Image 1 (cartoon, rainbow, N blue to C red):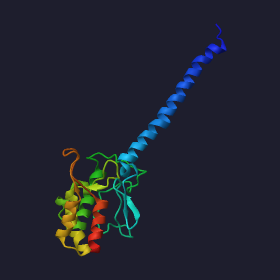
Image 2 (image 1 turned 90 degrees about the horizontal axis):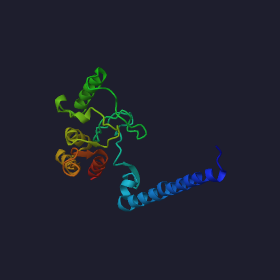
Image 3 (image 1 turned 30 degrees about the vertical axis):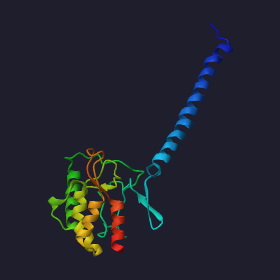
Image 4 (image 1 turned 120 degrees about the horizontal axis):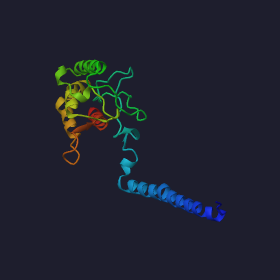
Length: 202
């Protein structure tokens, strides 16, 4: 059985036209529309929710970061974030794969709890879970109000501020649950520390 070239060309031409149309729709028109809507309605989030201070970008509300001294140790002047096994590198997101009963994880969490308690001058049983465990993404910018609360006295003393003023900052920066019932209350460490800096400057 033989096929005439013109007969074979018809389905190939139809397939090419379909490919061309779908490429234009899904590769050009759709992305352009979505980008336009995002920029018009959610410009801040579409551009990374960047935060500026003193005329320069200092981070994103969506990505956590470390608040350490030049030696790499946690700086007592700032509220500290939850641990990150990626160093808050957005190119290396993901949680650890150790199970809750894994001896290595148990040892790591136990030591972290001891260090957090000593750093903040509280009992080990007052240290909340998010102070010693990383998030699923390893770049979570939030901590729980409980973790922020145990840091208030240490931050206030290091900055020479009244404890009640620092506690009020935490209350002001505590975000409620999404839609009133999804997730947990949380505190964005970056925005809290920027407000703390402004308060310390007087």
